[in-house]
Image (cartoon, rainbow, N blue to C red):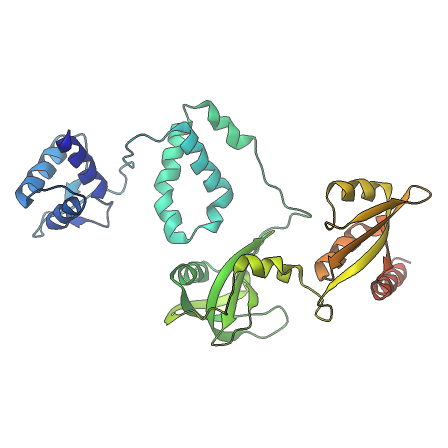
Length: 330
C-alpha cells in the first residue's frame, strides 16, 4: 500500500511542460512528505511507471540529471476523481467568477474547468448551469475594453503587494504617469475599478481599468493607508460618489406613487424608512440616507414616480432640472 501511495504522490509532483522536475528534486519532494526513499528507487519507479503506458509522462533526453514532465496535451490526472458536485462548483466559478481571478490562476484553473466539463457530461447536474443567471441592475452596457498588457500587470501587482508604474487617462484630463500602490479591485456593473494610492501619499483614489494606457511592474512594496480595509471603504459609500459638502446622512422626504411604495416596502432605502399613505394613491416616504450622486441617479431613474420634498436644496436641484427638461422637450 505504501508503494501505491508513493506512486500517486510521485505522479502528482510531476508538472506539465514547459515546467519539469529533476529526479533528485522529486526525491526531495517525496522525502519532505515522509517517504524514506533513495535516488535509485525513485529512478526505478519513474522508469516503471513511464514504461507501463498508463501514465504518459516523459523525460528530457540530453540533461543530467533527467527532468520529468507531462506533455502539454495530457488531461489532468485527478485522484480521487472529481465528483459532480465539485464539477458544478468549478463550472459556476468559470461562468460567473473567472474575471475575479488573477491571469496566472486562470491559466492554472483551465485544466480543472475542462475536467469539470467532462465530469458534468454524465451528470444530471449539467443542466443547472443553464438555469441560473446574474443580470445587472439597470441598463446593460457593453463592457469597456481593457488593455491586454495592462490587466495582468495590475493583477500581479495586487497579488504580490507590489507597486507598479502606470499611465492613466482620466475622463477629463490628459494622460499622466504615476507610481501606484494597488489596494483592491471593485467590480461594478461592467466596469472594473482599481482602488489605489499614488506615490507615498495616503489619499485613496479610484481608477477605471479601461483608462490605463500603460503599466509596468515595480519592485517597491505597496504603501497601505493606516487601518485601510476594502470592505469598510466601500461601506462608507465611496462608490456611491458622495456629495463632498455633505458629510452626514440627510433626512429625505419624497412623495411617491403606489407602485413605488410597493417597491420600497420590499426593498427599503434605509433601516429607519417610514411610509405613510396620503390621498389619491400617493404616499410619503421619510428616511435618512447618504447624499450622493448615486441617490440622485436613482431618483431620476423613476421620473414622475418620485417628487422630492426635502431637503429643500435637493428639491430646488430637481426643480431646476425639471425646468431644463421642459425646455428641451418643448
